[in-house]
Length: 472
Ligand code: GDG
Image (cartoon, rainbow, N blue to C red; front, side):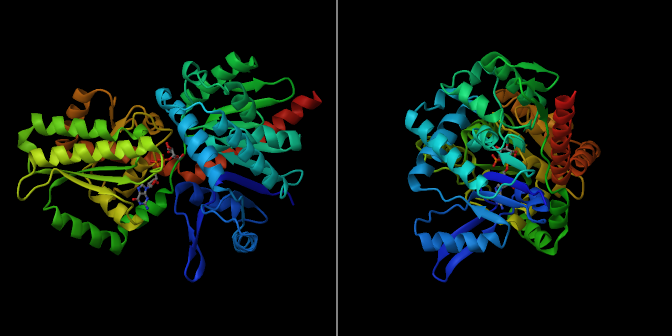
């Protein structure tokens, strides 16, 4: 029976060596939940890196055997591959360019070589399991060359590709020395999905200008096949967040936090450490807000969670220092014996505590400079069982296209951010509820399961269309 193969750089599990042998920790991420309904069924599988280096062959065999029981197949990467392919080309070349920080991009042939080599390694791993008739779904910017590599091995197969980060405008994308090879790599797919129509439009424009293919109404004609490009805004497992928020554990945590914070108004900020998330700009806006609104002193707390990420990369280390300094400056300037303007944490929280923070926060401050979608804001909305609370959201996040009832801001406009904070903290309850209800409807309807379903349906549709065009 034909099967579905999901491929991403990381498997939805982390394998670790412990004193008692190998330990397996499954991911709770949204993608893992959504695709769980696919890869755990029938003979379907998920292929990716297990997150730890294994050079010993016996150990690799053990990991492969254990993962096979959970429908996963590992691709083992070496330390130098992770350095040059992942930290290098993926995170120091593609990530900054795709997030409009091209001045941070490193153009290094060694990185590019490693990127090609690892994409070929993934292709080989897929070919060990793929059979004619299988459906293949490749995820994200680490594997942009994989669709074409797979196509050259299996001309007739059904290949979908989804990019979780933005696709920049042609003027930015064309700065990449390997722009054409990257587009050709993606064009091996039958369906190419992005979070927003703007991302899809930018991609189409790059294809027509750089590769010269005809593009019309979301279809690309490469001379052999019709390739479909469309927007699929990713949702979350809304039910999971609503259930968590109603749990006794979350309620107890919420009460504990509220007592500790003495019923202050809480502004919540949660991100991975990344310059695309606009954390320093957010802190500067909060500092200005405190300066201009002394009546809020002692009454409001910014609860800021920064989750460690990519801290081997120098730019991320610098960003961490900038944030530390800003938090120190703001707290030392405004704190009193009984009040701290910012509660700052540089670590990851268990999901139950995250849920308590979401459900107690009066305001969620989500102000990325650029973000493919941003799931944190959707998780906040799903956790608001009492339908109170305000979302302040950057126009530069993909989520802003769906959440028109948020207080939308341009993260570069300090004055507007300060104004939005004031508006959020003083918004009448009735207005909060109206806005929250509308946003909850959207988050509930367009959840992660809906996202998976429409992507897969569209993939079937384009395949059928290609076949009917071939027989015409
Ligand atoms: C990429 C794109 C796109 C955060 N802190 C903790 C924690 N988290 C979880 C959140 C959320 C996830 O991490 C972050 O997701 P985002 O979507 O906000 O951001 P990226 O990681 O940059 O994701 C993005 C996404 O892919 C999906 O396509 O939306 O634009 O950049 O789920 O809950 N989870 C736990 N503890 C924490 O402290 N357990």
